[in-house]
Image (cartoon, rainbow, N blue to C red; front, side, top):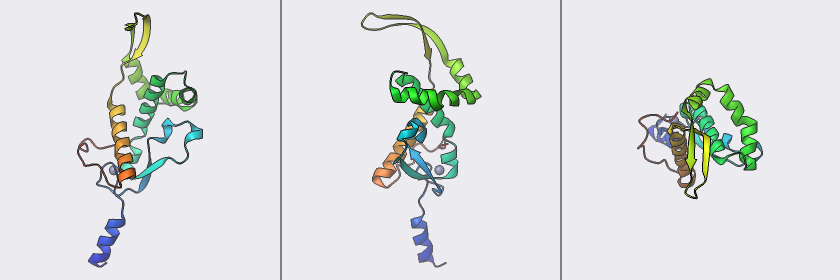
Length: 161
Ligand SMILES: [Zn+2]
């Protein structure tokens, strides 16, 4: 293959928007498809991602979805629908995640600025890893989608999966 043809071919290969090292041979949804109720999953943004970055994020996506669900509470219909549908099922299926959640549960008395007191409130001290890494992936994906270029490689050292 002539040098000019090789350069044109390389230019046409989209790189993974997360690691910037591997070819983006798969399409990843940003934000993660799983955080949307099944009826609201059409026309989602996808970006090129390598198999390692795309496949390695599924457990983070599940944890992120569970965290969003728990934060949103059961009063919002979309949150309730996700919780009753796939979130609770995903938590029960993922023994490591379930164990982590149990280890982070605590009971506390909460006193609010308005003077209201809630006793024996169950809380989860949520680790930030799934949140931080998922938000980083969303930022990188949406930046690529809107601008057409990757964000610099500042937070790549730990990998993206
Ligand atoms: Zn990658």
